[in-house]
Image (tube, rainbow over all chains, first blue to last red):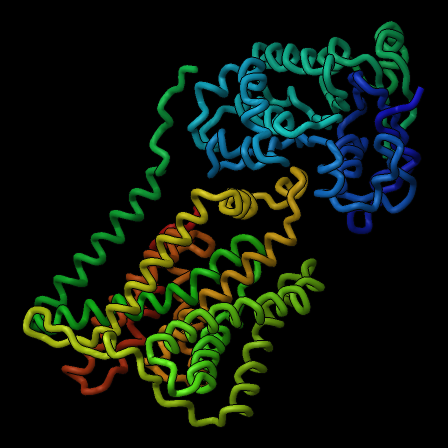
Length: 234
Length: 335
């Protein structure tokens, strides 16, 4: 099986801190892979290393078979990777439309995708002319995911989409992400194991900057000992 | 698709800032009418607007660059001066047989292009290696300003050049409210207004504008969306220096060109940016006009009662201090 994305034993420093000390992740095409682990384990840094915001100093990252580590973030993104950070990074002064428009890589991207995006997140249609800063947390999360859907991305990196959101909003987001998995590949960081278990096909557990376990989500869900050991009470 | 109307795009703080600015202008006008006859008031207002526009041409590039790169470009005044000298050079190079109008337009366009090209060289060659160190960049731009001053002094001498002749149709006077005014002041005001509106349209209506406004908030995310932020920086820096150079050339028929002319404008531009709220474009535009009017009013009062323009520079410092005491983030700054 050749993976769409393979992260091979990367080490990443932020300043002088050795944050990742050997993370390996295989993400097969058209699947959802969940990156699990406790707070501070290195999940967010793993995503940032992949997109090139915190480039790894050792190891390699391959996307569609080609090494992408070492390229700049904008070049990596242009290969077809969408990034949805945990803080959502909605541009507050820009309208919802402009927040989507800025993600275009080819002219007309948004016009092609608009109907699909608004069908996925009907709220955004209603709020199309609103400034991003006026949106609620859930609406901003939807916009952040929608923004990653504007260009033709083969891979989405989604960091903590459920964080701080009401259960009913989480349900909506889960439905949307589930619907996406048919046509794109997702690497998801998720603190909420219940969410991750429903969404993901595969999992990778990160602890203290190392990937320590991976496999099929169906197997993990039945292994309470493993869950307790790495994820705490879930 | 049903859409709901967005809440007032202009936030309440922005509206408050606009009201405060409006009241300030009204206050200045009242002071003017108390002290001076109407013909003098018109002179003061025109003088204030023309100075304000020149401040804007220097400050606009600085404030956008600051918002995007966190670099206060202290060489921006030097670019203003470069524009004036480039204008002189073009005037001097073109043969006498070329009409004054053509030479004037050539000087305006040439100075703008030259300012942009020098800006490009500075950004790529000097600033880019220092992106991780904003403080170093500020020191660098300060040193660059001194260097440019000395280069100009070495080439053209310390004395400065007498103002170049504007085309005949701008070299006239206008009669308004019983007073006479140089038409050229009105031209400077027009150039400033056109750029004010033009830059605003660029920021609001174009893709580059969207990227700039987004980049001011979160350049990392802009980069992660697949946009080459460094190239945007270069372009914005270049546009800023080009506008400053255009300002210098626009002022040349009025002020001439002399070493150090940039420093005068730089200091006022910094005051304008601080009053406006550092990286707010609206703030910079409006503060330019407020500072220009304040300065012109104080200048006139000072000339009339003290026989010296000394209060002009003092007044804008006091203005800045008051604004900072009341609103430390500036008139249009984020809290």
